[in-house]
Length: 252
Ligand code: GLN
Image (cartoon, rainbow, N blue to C red; front, side):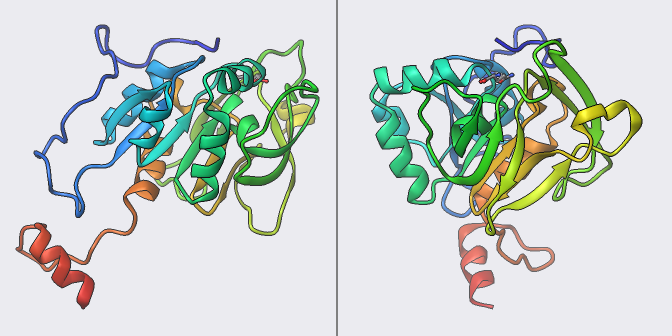
């Protein structure tokens, strides 16, 4: 299990919460974002999602999966999660939801699960698909368990993201429809990792080889939550963003 320091205040359980401005201000209501809770750093992702103002819930069962608008696949161990997805009869339903366009975000082991193909995986490891990429598992080397770097991430404003890699994969190949959002900078200290692709997006699927849920920097989760909410309606100055104005905004 990945854990460095815990970025959230003691006692913060990352449980569901209401939108800070009260419910119903987003067109169509607040989005519910699940975190696959079979194994891994579930609590950290729930807390990061709550901080983005979405309704965040753990997902272990089919009915819980059916109830979410989007899903985060946490860091942890992809081989274990793959096995548990089968045991909990979530593998097929989750593949279907992703294929149908449900927004999904995978960090580290989650990225591995979303990849079309894995190098150095276990032979019985199963893939969810959604990302037309080939990833190399434990790519940064088994000896060097963790590695940190400042990364510029496309779509994340406000300076580089401090990226924490723990027995992380990197992306070896990307398909035409995959947008590369971040690569390890080509610096001396980056060694073999220099230039490797570590954040990608394909349609509504986002993945990072690193763990933004462990650093307290909520910008990658905000990027995902913005994908989940979709484009915001045009808002005329001085008017409340209620459903009526939103509908008018859309027709402009
Ligand atoms: N090496 C792990 C795997 O194969 C991923 C590690 C992580 O999520 N920090 O799933």
